[in-house]
Image 1 (cartoon, helix red, strand yellow):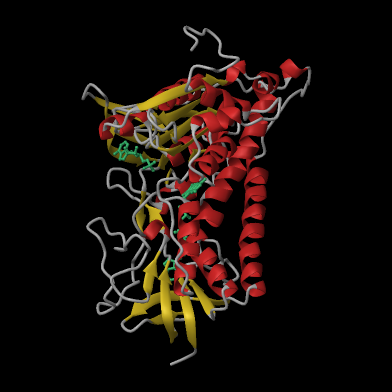
Image 2 (tube, rainbow, N blue to C red; image 1 turned 90 degrees about the horizontal axis):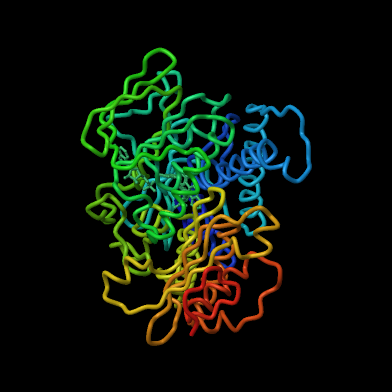
Length: 483
Ligand code: FAD
Ligand code: AMP
């Protein structure tokens, strides 16, 4: 038996590393176990988010946006670029540099916060013991007063389109789509969800003809449908061919291409050939090899680790956070759970508000939402007022050639408290956060409407949408009635 810790965290993604740092800040002797290694055999911290998720996808979204802007948007500013070309391997190298920098940053934070980093595969044994198996197969058992499971998620693989590296990486998952060394001419994407739209956008901006095959009849079903419709219009105008109600039924790699079969929205069989196919049909919790039979930790019916509202599992002193438990699979949701659990372990009464978690799709423009959608409120029988405001009436947006999209604010009909805000438009990710803060403080639409906003800013669309809830927006084009 080796050293004993106050807290052992298994997994160093945004849920696990944040839990570990917060626990150490609170004076707890903490270790974080991570199995991910680089080519040199050293530990790689940061999980999916830093290595193959949020950060690398945003790096490529940024590069591809710059290229696309230079290609199609600069001339109207009087900027002549001449012949443009994209060096994909350089773009991928830049992404890898960013990933290494961010991941190294976590390792540095562990050192400065005195979190012990343990390389190896963690397995929870009975009695809050953690067995760690290293790359050579050697294992060490550590003991802890508290164990935090943060083992995250992995892409769902579907039998109709198996991801098989032996097939020349023609059918890939999101990780493979961050590694292409050239722009595929014809790119298929299965699943027009958040990840599919982001990755489809990257390669579409660089010149791929992108077809997104989505099984559901509605687009972004979890989003407010008015904003989803607007988003689809904008993305389609940009060249993404989004086909709803199309269920993929098979795929066959033939040499350097893949033929995909699907049932279209009329139930008719269709076939389409692509040079690359990205499978983005969701993610599943990762618990392989994690739990000894007698660990006592239970899974729910969908394979997530079962936890209560405060992330406590069925075993006292064992907690679980992030993608491996219920709730949205978002980095910031996992991080916040990490803070809550660390503080609870330290005896504090921390809680998390699951009703106010922003959700962003980093297309251009961005799509962001917080709180409830109009569809959810209708289903719950809640009475509400809606205010919308288009970016085309916002001076800063017009000046920045970013006038596509709108802000939609929903407030309770009786109390005027903001119940939700849904945005497609420039900097939507940052704008929605302003409303999230307001909602945490119980803000009404009137409160936001009475706040002085800087001019000219994209944020003014938030103020105008809030005013619009009561029919008072100042710059509203095509006003029908004024109260
Ligand atoms: P993970 O990040 O998956 O980390 C789990 C870690 O645990 C991994 O490092 C894994 O190696 C390790 N591990 C697992 N089992 C063991 C074990 N037994 N022993 C030791 N170590 C183990 N979310 C956002 O909020 N915003 C975004 O913009 C965004 N973009 C995304 C883009 C893509 C392409 C993808 C794939 C995901 C994106 N996500 C985004 C989702 C986000 O990455 C996840 O929600 C987040 O990483 C979950 O964090 P986590 O800590 O729970 O798990
Ligand atoms: P997300 O949950 O945001 O990652 O999105 C995954 C998307 O993939 C969902 O919208 C699913 O409807 C879609 N999907 C799942 N299986 C298939 C399939 N066989 N064909 C087409 N789309 C699918």
